[in-house]
Every structure is written in structure tokens, then in C-alpha cells.
Image (tube, rainbow, N blue to C red; front, side):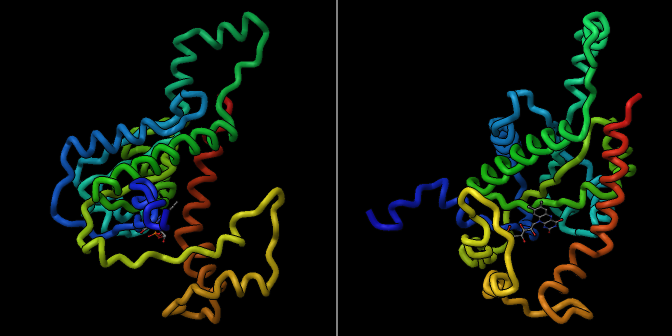
Length: 262
Ligand SMILES: Cc1cc2nc3c(=O)[nH]c(=O)nc-3n(C[C@H](O)[C@H](O)[C@H](O)COP(=O)(O)O)c2cc1C
């Protein structure tokens, strides 16, 4: 069996996927939307409890507003399909209330556990895993996608826009659309060499020499202003940037509200 034969259709979709930010005018049909949502819902989910919900943003004014609330990304407004994946514990806690759990706990002298940080992380896992299934299903149909993490910014505005209660957190957004660019002309982005990502049995911190090897093939044409090396460029452009600071503020507010006891 040669290398080509070993690559099945699923691997092909995974191998040739790339983020798509420029969308063709061609619309995504209702059937395709249904297949994307179905794929998301077939993803593994903790305890089969589906700690997530999905909001399809159809309203153009809302898409326009998301451009600014999500760090000024104009492609959001042009995406034919926008899905927000919510980490959602609200549904289960509303169900627990209608099932009489607070009373049951009081009666049996049990602690009535309301969602804490661990539940938020678990619900985020569920939501993100569902989102990635949606990406792969879309890609398999020739529909490109782009994750937008900036949906975790501006929590107050997003809560108001989408009627989110305290145990519902918008962990990730996805824009979908048929790619404007011919997929056969795609240039896939490099990844770090496997040995720096995949460890056996124990985690390994890297030294200076290993970092230089890790970034060897990461050609960067332009460095951001004031940056002298790639590390500075990433820090100034990403980790230490204004949008990261807004993420940090917004998520702190969301977590504080999530864990607040009534
Ligand atoms: C959690 C997450 C958040 C992302 N947020 C954004 C974003 O806000 N805007 C954007 O244009 N791309 C975003 N991306 C796409 C990444 O930039 C892209 O996946 C990365 O550059 C690798 O490129 P590739 O997907 O084409 O391999 C995000 C991806 C992930 C996984």
C-alpha cells in the first residue's frame, strides 16, 4: 500500500483544511446548515449531557455588531453562516430546579452544588468539541470556516445581545462560507515539529536551542513595530495586545458571575 492509498477521505479533509476568511457569494443551503448542526451534535459530550447550546446568528445587524465586539473583524459580517457555541450549564440547572433537586438536597442534608469553575471548563470542552465537528462536517462539503475566539470579549454586550444568563458562556464562534479562493491554491500553515508537541509519559519544558529549532521553519515576513524577534512579535501582537487584555477582563467578569453563590 503506498502513502496515497493510506489517506482516507476523513484524513484528506483534516489534512487540507485551512482557515477561510474570504467567502464566496454562494449561500449555504438549509440542508447544509442542518448537516453542520447535526455533525456538531454527534460529537462526544461529557456524560451525554450536552453542556452546550448553539446560536445561529441570522440577523445581519447582529453580525455587523459582532464585527466590532469581536476585535474589528469585517469577515464576520460577510459570513453566510455564523454559529456561536455556548458553554451551557443553565439548561441542566433549570432542569434540576424543576426536578426538585434543591428540595431533595435540603431533605437529605446534601450540599446543593451549583456550577463552579470545573463545570465551566467541562461545558467549554463540550462546546468546543461540538464546534470542531461542525468545522470538519462543513469542510467535507467544501464549506470553509474560521474560529473567532474574540466572542469571549465584551461579555456584558454579548449577554445583552443574545439573552445569556449567568451559566451560559459564549466560548467560541464560527464563521462559515464557501471559500472565495480556489481550494487547490491553498497554502497550508506550518505547524511546530511533532517532537515539541507530542511527548511520551512526561511533559518536557524547552530550552533556548530547542525553541530555535521549533521556530526554524516559521518564516515571518514582517515583524510588528518594535519587535526584534519572533517571541517579541507574538507577545506584542497577541498575548500582550489590547484584545488579549479585553479577553482577560471579560472572562474574569464571566467567571466571577458564574461561581457567585446566590
Ligand atoms: C481558538 C481559536 C481562535 C481563533 N480566533 C480567530 C479569530 O478571532 N480570527 C481569525 O481570523 N482567526 C482565528 N482563528 C484561526 C487561527 O488563526 C488559525 O486556525 C491559525 O492561524 C492556523 O491556521 P489554519 O487554521 O489555516 O491552519 C482561531 C483559531 C482557534 C483555534
